[in-house]
Image (cartoon, rainbow, N blue to C red; front, side, top):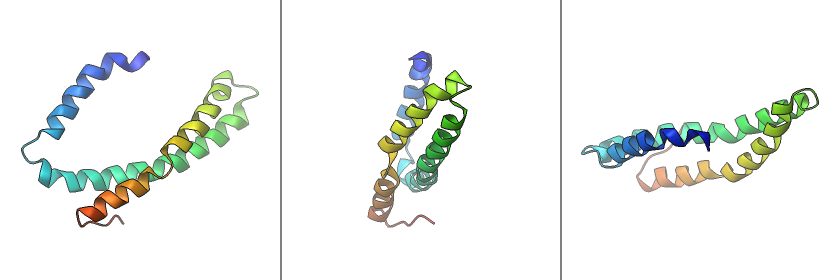
Amino acid sequence: MTLRFAEPALLSVAHEFWHHPRLERMLPDFLLSLYDIVRASVPLMEAAEIEARSRAARDPAAARLAPYFAKHADEERHHDEWLLEDLRVIGLQAN
């Protein structure tokens, strides 16, 4: 994968976050923000798939991206529900 060059930096930042001394205070806001992102990801990928399919005949990149968006949307489906459960466990509700 072409993004492997960024992996060491990403792992370092992730380690800092998960070992932060104030993680307990930071985690609720993090989960709420993550929920908003995850909740939007499937509809966004579904819209991107539709757009890519509409361009596929004249755009080879779009032709290759359409199946990726369809597959990835299915893989991510219901992850927002998992986060809602995590939020409920810690006594929070997403808007």
